[in-house]
Amino acid sequence: MIRAPYTFLAALVLTLGLSACGFHLRNKLTLPPDTPAVKVQSSAPYSELVKILNRGLTASGATLADEDAKSGFATLQVLSERWGDLPIAIDAEGRAQEYSLRYAVIFTLLRADGSVLVPQQVIEQSRDYVSPPQDATGTATEREILANELRREMAASILRRIDSVVRARIEHGQSLDASPGTGDTPNPAPVQPPAQ
Image (cartoon, rainbow, N blue to C red; front, top):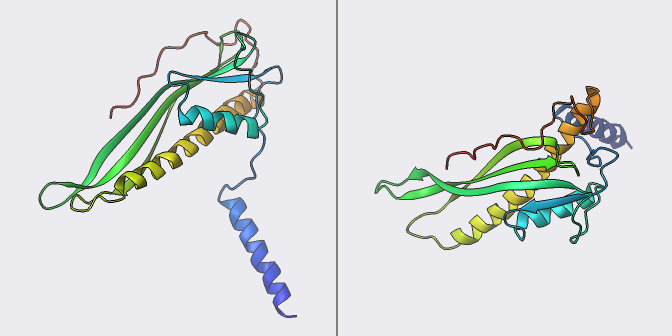
């Protein structure tokens, strides 16, 4: 009987703590209302990132364009995917024992008419893993697990970036249409990927 107020108080403290740390329930992805559908394009069309982005777009409420569609859809272009392993710890004999797995993606979102909705951006992520040279058993498996985790986080980050750019434009009263004078350009200058 006495525990009920304490349980309620603990739940209240946890709820306030979560709201203070920036935790928010996920909303649907914000896209312009006239966006008919989205197609993910990549130089590696069968990459895992493309598959995860397609699933994420669907789960976020976006409509995917048909595979055979030639026009009439917005395009999420994955312009570059880069992986790298950077040694971050060595042993007494100078052999790498710990690595940082780095993943960088350049992307942009274009409207159906080819004008830019979300300018080219780079997102970088990394995870550290241990790979002792005297016992590398399991290192490849651990690296692949980390790579899969990074792909999922990358897809979520890309969708959050798109959502935040579109929401910011709406909040600032900027046009989401591709009309003259909006400052949109069909093809922005390419962004160079980070050095590996």
